Length: 427
Image 1 (cartoon, rainbow, N blue to C red):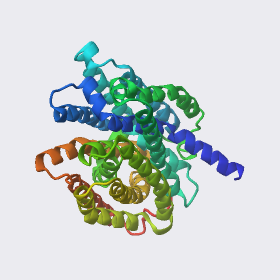
Image 2: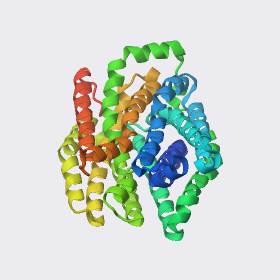
Image 3: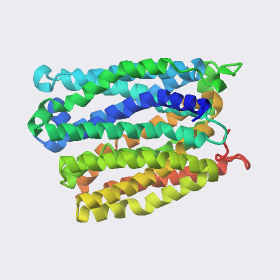
Image 4: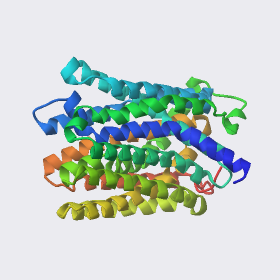
């Protein structure tokens, strides 16, 4: 590997480090939803306790649009590098708070309040973290490879999923269930806190992107908000595109451990093994899809994968719940992984190209964060749908709806673009 490519690789690793921490903590919430529910949201009804946990998880996503509107314009004005350091700092505060809050039995109602506050801090920073990372990668990419570079924003999250699932599997194997429920679930959160100083150190070594540094004029905050308002159709279309990504992602990753244990009645180990396989599958397909979109265009991939999800999401889950086994779980989840990663590898870079350069971080982050309020609620929505309909495959209808949103948005946004402006072309 020549020196230039090695430097690019180091930069990608530094940029995506905060992405790792964000998804690591978010995913731990899904793995340990039940002990978190008992620790902070005790209730005689297990369904009510679990729903309270999932709603606190969703509360972080409600803060994302606010983070996008506050931090996004800040990054578009002061620079990509400084913005990524700020988001990591805020995210770390939320992580530390959740890891160390005593249980409800110890401090009473203050416990769930502090947990929700930690989630709100994480959501506020995450509202611009994905946008900041995606924009940085798109602006540092070599010509003709923008899709491949930007795909590592999502790929880094898959590493976090595999690491979190491995830790969860190890803890489940080495500790008795009672100890895991009592305090063992905190161990991965403590590990997340321990790596924060290292992540902060490597992010500080980042340089500003050449594209941003070359700009002679930087818009004021008022001008950024005016540009965002003038481009509201693009932002709204971006929201619909991202809905497909966020719903599919949180269903196949964060929700899978709970779905496998509570609905499919699989063992803890099998649920986490399936989750690790999903993370590895996502990691494989995301850069392949990003690179393929550089060659054949973003639009064909976006259409193919949304149509495939629309047609197969519910039938696949219905087949799984009709006779749940570990083998069937792997088949269905890996198929859904392929649909998610194939779509997202092209979608993220497409969104960076759709938004005007002067508000690229703010516009991307706002669209992504608004969509994530729906995607992040998938855990609560899926639990609610199963409870109210009695159909264990009901989450498939939710994923089909998300795929329809992505398909309609893709067709509308590409129709609106003047001829000759293909999202497949790298700027």
